[in-house]
Length: 143
Image 1 (cartoon, one colour):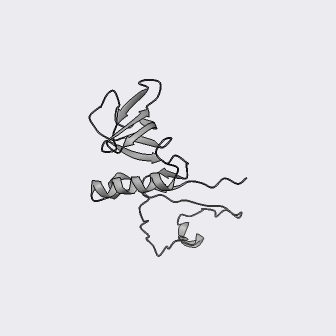
Image 2 (cartoon, rainbow, N blue to C red):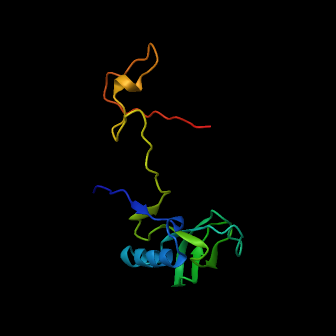
């Protein structure tokens, strides 16, 4: 059986309004195995019942968006929380996982999706271009 990698979940920051994000989460719950078993990440700067920013919990009992119980790990165990303080991290069926939005690349030097040709990518004297199939990433840091 070939495993299919999970698709990308949209994050809270990608929505202009909180209600639009909560509606999206509700749709994902309905589409992807329900609420129980889904993972959420606590985002609020202020701790709540021992839950701190960045902690990930697995929903064990879901009543509504404003009240669910999640297992937050050995340190604090099961605690109630709400989706106003959290972001959906992974759906219950594991078909969607949150990752940061990938920005569109900025191309320079005439490059495109496939990047520069080897003649333009190698600019210093004595540089050798690999003669085997490979993938090269060139990174430029800005100060």
